[in-house]
Structure formats: C-alpha cells, structure tokens
Amino acid sequence: MLKLKVPATTANLGPGFDTLGMALELYNTLEVTKIEEGLEIIIEGYGADELPIDEKNLVYQAMNKVFKKTCYYPSGLRLRLSNQVPLARGLGSSATAIVAGMVAANKLTGEKLSTEELLNLATRLEGHPDNVAPALLGGIVVSTLQDKGRVMYEKIAVPELKVVVCIPDYQVSTTEAREVLPKKVDFADAIFNVSHTALLITGLLNQDYDLVGRALEDRLHQPYRQKLLPGFNKLVNKVDKNALGVVLSGSGPTVIALTLDKEEQIGEEMVSIFTEEGIEANYLVTSPTNQG
Ligand code: HSE
Image (cartoon, rainbow, N blue to C red; front, side):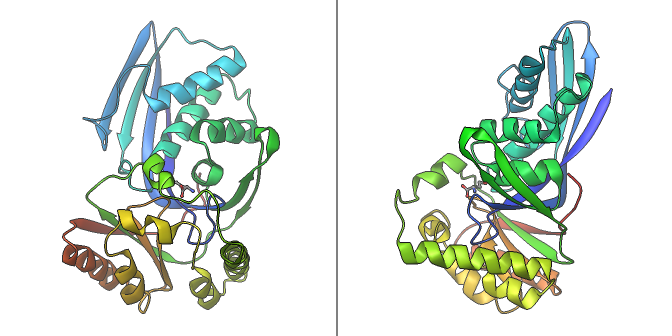
C-alpha cells in the first residue's frame, strides 16, 4: 500500500496572478492499493457525497495520464481519499487531487517520470501552474507556463508567517471566476502588478514583512472578482490594519490574511464581516509549509 499527503495551496498571493502559489499546512491524503481487478474509490471528508467514484474521478484521471505516458497498466486499484481541503473554495483542491494521483502513479511505475515531467503534466491537466507547483514541491513557488507546455519555476522557502484562512460556505468554480476577468487589461495595471509581484518576492526573500504587506495589492483579478464575493473590499480595508495583508485565495471565495500575530482576532473579524454580508463562513489558522 502506498500512502501520501499533498498540501492545500493558496495561489496568486495578491498580485502574482497565475504565477505565485504557497503550500499550506492542510492536507489531503491518498492511499493506493493494488488489487486483482477493477477500480474501487473510497472518499472520506470533503467531496464524499459529491465527487465521482469511477474513472471520472480526478485523482484517477491524473494517475491515468502517468500510466499512459509510461505505458504502465496496473490490473486493478483501490484508492482511498481523505480530504481535508474543501472543494471549489480557492484552496487548490483539484491541484491536490492531480498531484496526489500523479505522484502515486509515478511511484507505482518505479519513478519513471522526473519532477519536471510531473509538473508539466499536472499543469496541462489543471490549466495553470500556480496551484500544482506548490502542491508538488511545497514552499512558495514562482512559476510560469512557457511555450511547448513547459513550466519554468523557482521555489522560495516559506516565511515565518501565520495564514488565517477564512472560508465562506459556498463554492465558486475556477472556471466561473475566470469568466469574470477581462480579455485585455490596462497597461498601467499590468505595470502595477509586475512591480508589486517583484516587490513581494523581494520582501519574502529578505524576510521584510512590512514590504510583503505593502506589496500584496492587485489590479488584475481581485477588482473583477469582487462581484462574486460581497464584503471583500470591507474585509481588505478593515482587516488590513491588524494583518500584513488580505487577499483572495486563488480564485476565491476563500480569503486569506497573512499575519505575524493576533491570528484568532483576525479570523473572528473576518467571519463577522462575512456575517454582516449574510454569508456564513468559518476560519482556520495555518502556516505555510515547505513540504510538497
Ligand atoms: N491563478 C488561478 C486563478 C488560481 O486565479 O484563476 C485558481 O485557484
């Protein structure tokens, strides 16, 4: 039996749209057992009543990509998924499924594919690299999808920060959250995001958390996605005073606050702002992790 755990991820980190992602201390676990024939899928935790338990399951689809590429076909498989990462909330649940499936399948083949090949394959299935890269590698990963489907990336060690993760009780699919984005952006907004992303990475590398906080601004996606998340502006304005910064986690609707302290107070404040908007939400306090 093979067992592995893959972290949740928070993508974008404000200005780094489709470029930055960070692994969090919150994991989905996958157990794979070879059986004589067929496919058995057991799901515990998030998605137990929602996710398919046949060939359409994303973990299995991801495994299949590796099997096809390496010409390895197991006679039968039993998969047990224990999911702690909520679905369609902007915490990279699909990336954890893809990475778990691909890493497990690669282990079954005797590690025929390299980490780079797995990352390229995972990105092709996910569509963008910023969740699958930290899910696979851990840490904060700066990544970009190049021509020919290759991912260029660099991992940064995680900062000594707390992450308050505030999760509204409704789902927003990434597809839906990408549909509200414009086809073209203003040149000044593009410059704003390039400069803020560069400053954010500099702050992270130098452990200059004041700079990290000031760089967490975005003009490429959050302004357009606010319509999917009532209260987001209020959250940013109010909670920013106690935290280093507040940003949408991936494509939302989860919102994260990066902070050095007062994490419980920040979490309660975030929940109460959502409550004022008529949205139920809960929060958890976690940390970035270097483990992928
Ligand atoms: N970069 C992606 C987006 C992340 O914002 O659409 C999705 O989790």
